[in-house]
Amino acid sequence: MSDLGELYVAAPPVVGGRSSKARSLATKPQALNQPAGASQGHRILALLAEKNNDLTIAEAEFRRAAQSNSASAWIAAPWIDLGAFYARHQQPDPVAIAVRNGLNLDKLRGATLVDAASILTAVARDPDLARRVLREYLVSPARSDAAPAFKVHLQLGDLLARSADLSSARKEYAAALALAPNFPPARKLALPAAGQPMNPPRNSFLPRDLLPVSPLNHTRHVEFPIEAVP
Image (cartoon, rainbow, N blue to C red; front, side, top):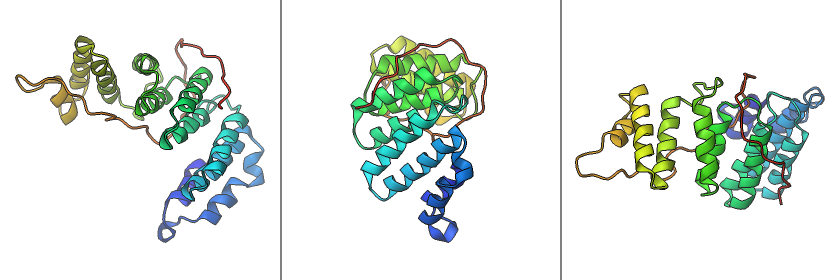
């Protein structure tokens, strides 16, 4: 339901987008019978409200999506969505709370970790946590093409370089280059011109579209207490 709902919200009418279709899909009784369906319905309503610049309703629906979701495979994604919403609207403090809640609930330990790190980086919050979850992703059995490892190595390298840990940053850039030798950013950062300092682009990796992924085994991870978002 979420994919189709997002199409209705985002696409112009000429290619099938229409707010009424999105709202109808979000409120289908059969969709709301399941926790995941209810959560996705609230997410569609949140995206629709945000598109219409009704940020109060959008925030409320993103919160409902997070609080109504108990499906094990998708439980973290709505919290990361909520964090991304706050990031888009320059509210960094609730970003960190929502992201930590999502990480605490995440059992997949897949690309959601990369989304979480990207959102924290975008609002300059909790860089230690961002680095930690990127490292966890790189050794997780739930790695996927949704967040390619070579890009995550670059992202981690950027964070390390900004923290002045240039030796570790170089290792991450070298790992990215080994995985993707023809990817221009990897070559530029791993092999800087003579005499040129490493200068990673600011916020070079933005969050992917935040969609649930398939259930996979997960590794051990750091637990955070669930916090109330102000």
